[in-house]
Picture 1: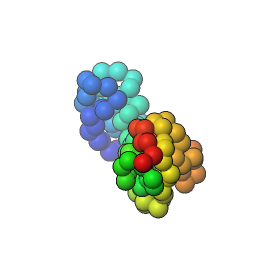
Picture 2: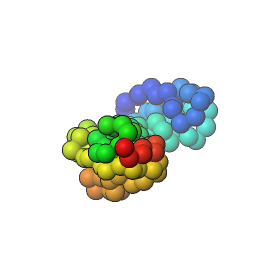
Picture 3: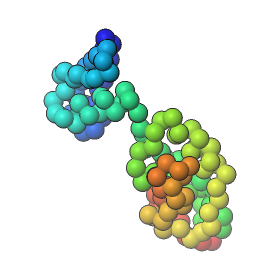
Picture 4: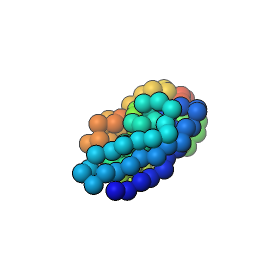
Amino acid sequence: MEKRNYTCIVCPKSCKGELTIKDDGTFETAGFDCNNGKKYAVNEYTDPKRMLTTTVAIEGGIFNLLPVVSSEEVSKTKLRDCIHALYGIAVKAPVRAGDVVVSNILDTGVDIIAARDIKAK
């Protein structure tokens, strides 16, 4: 049996709780204020995910970099590879916030979208 402590980041309450991993592979949670915390702890143990935010190069724009964000969370195991893939991307201005910059990055099912408008020079 193994125990791990987590602070939930789903809502602003940031409740603290404990996840117990039983010998048979099942989970037990304690201390979380709601089901969101319980789900967060199990997901954080089994397949932690994070939103991806970074910048990509933009050609012909009023700025040289375009801020981008993932459409949903990406598994931490693929996060670094996704960022490296984005280093090689260059989009052409103009770009509008919400435009898909990369569809289904590295077969994750997650799109990378523009986080702001950038006009052409």
